[in-house]
Length: 194
Image (tube, rainbow, N blue to C red; front, top):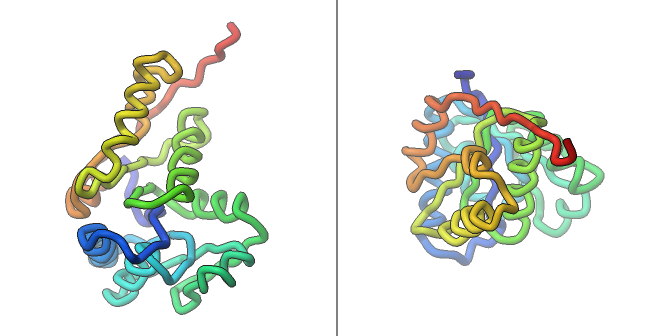
């Protein structure tokens, strides 16, 4: 088990959402700061992104925000963090976020959050990293995503062991505790053409 010193949090940039999602983002940020875990995130100051970053900073934690130049203008990047990195494009942003993180937590979010989640799971499936990925399923928000992955396995578009690529928790407290005790999952990559 490796020590978790930084967590990349994928989450929505909309703030007009259910209060339980907002509270979970704030709670997660405080827990990360209290446990000396650096937040790595998409660099915005709006929505759940802004809430988790503000909470880490308000509790004397460290935050690395990473945002592409064009989104900095649209989302009004949160530059008052420990480290603020601008990238040329989305691909560089996601790569940098992955490089700087020891683990990943997925809070509720939209299409961008889905994109980031599936990419980091695919990289893990391909053996490009062995870092823990945790879906924080607040109020059942990700139930249908989990059902979809299970359906892919049933229909043989994904292997049963792909279900081991991620863990699920329902509270920020459970998420941090699980990540601190999770064993690395060594996914074996096999060719389909052998």
